[in-house]
Each structure stands twice: as C-alpha cells, then as structure tokens.
Length: 112
Length: 111
Image (cartoon, rainbow over all chains, first blue to last red; front, side, top):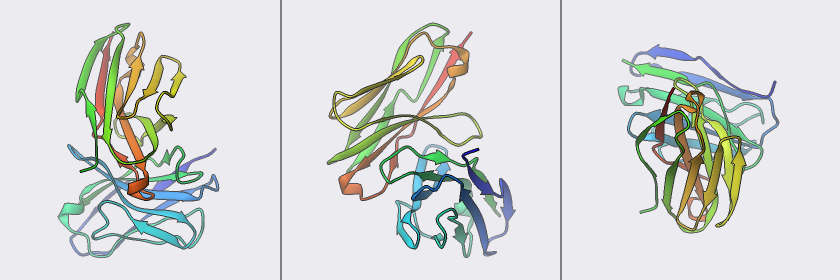
C-alpha cells in the first residue's frame, strides 16, 4: 500500500531534549516536506527536499533540522525543543515538486 | 505581501444544499493551485490540482475551478460524509519550491 509513515504519532518531551520524528515513503517520490499545523495559522512549511542530499528552508525553519540521505526517508530533528514548537506535524511526499502531496498521519508533539 | 485566503471560515449546510468555497491568492506567477480535504486528526487528502485560469476538475460531488485570482470548490448536493476542513494550497514561481496553504474552510453537512 502506498503510504507516508511518521513516527511517533504522539510525543511529550521536555524543553531542550533533542528529538527526531521519522518520515518514510514507499512511493519513490522525489519531493518531500515537513509542515506544522497550529490553530488559526493553518499548515506552514518547515523544510522541503527536492531529492537526496537537496534540502531547503520553508516558511518556518527556525529550530528545526532535516536530512535526506536516502530517497525514502526525511527525518525532522529538533535539537533543543522549546514550548513554542508544541504543534501537530505532518510529513508529505510528492512525485515531483509541482504535483499532489501524500501526507502522513501526523505527529502531535508537546514540549513542556 | 503574497498570501492565500479562504472564505468562509466555516460553513454549515443541510444535506443536499449546494454551495461554494472560495480560495483567493495574491501571488506572482502561479505554478499550481491544490485542493485538499482534511478530517479531524488526520493528514490532508489530495482532491485536485489546477494549473491555469479557466481549468476545471470534477470528482463526484466536487468541482474545482480556477481564475487568475481565485479558485472555487463547488459542492453539489452534499452529504454528511462531505463534512471536513477543505484546504487550498498555492505554489508560485516567486515562492521557489515552497507551498503556501490557506487557513481552510470548515464544512459541516447536517442530515
């Protein structure tokens, strides 16, 4: 089954404790991206990747890192999480940059 | 400032009562406009892509249209299962490879 898989689905952590949210797709898509969704602000793009080893900032990249060492995986790294990074996070992949995106199930992160 | 807006913010319809949702954008050089449906607690699900003014796409009770400054999502004879938040997203040449999402329209269809 074609899908985008994020883990974990739920995470509660403390300020400053490094964490990684994994994202994997099985559709051989080139374009992958991370979004955060906050009430009243909608979906905002954090980082995106055009292909392996090619990443770039979206609209809200501060406090986040990504890597794309393999085509299927695109982890999101929070090196020193802060409470303002409490949010619902989505990973998405697309065949190419200007085509429909397939979204993961979401990761609800709480930083206390 | 480039932006994507959606109206109304929320819409309640009776089953069978047709209506339209609006997505307005102010960007230079539209590359594509996308419509998604999002159910509570789930990731957005793709509905349509429109690339140029005048283009229309249909799927079951939904029809999406595009002009130079806005897109409409027409819902004909909606059913309760159409209840969801509908999001539009824009990709433009001056955004690079970014996508910008609108805030969404929360649709409720009452039986």
